[in-house]
Image 1: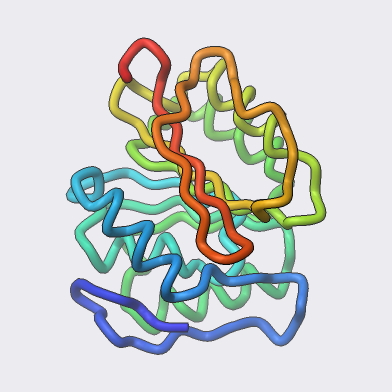
Image 2 (image 1 turned 90 degrees about the horizontal axis):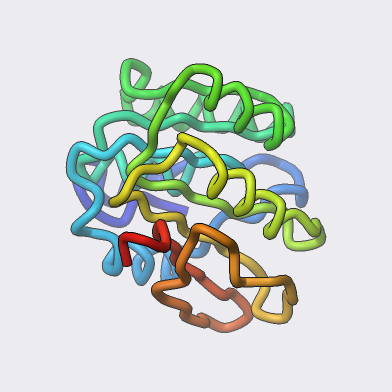
Length: 186
């Protein structure tokens, strides 16, 4: 796993010694970032199920302003810290270890708004719809926010979320990327 482009291009990142974390593959990350390039410069980013910090660090390398990393797994959080140190981004991140729902509620209470939100929950979980609904009903997003949901292509859930519009959907092998924006701002 490596940084694809930007300031830290080709930098090798650490991975946890566990199978509970599934980093986004380089080819999928490359495709994703080619889609969201116009949104990255000076963006405030949430990497909610951060795992290794792979997506948030890629965003920082490409010009994002600040990234909030969160993961509930202790080993994953340790790897995120080590990858942030490898890339010298300590002053541009906040790392938390919380359940995703508690993290979202905490960020709402802090009045944080995001330009980009990465959602890559464990494939076996059934929280995509709940997560999207919580974000849609919150102040975490503004008219230009994009939300990227990565899941197994076989995952079935209600993609039609009140307040959000599915603007793009792409499949790469067994991975599906869904990109949402606020409905009224398609």
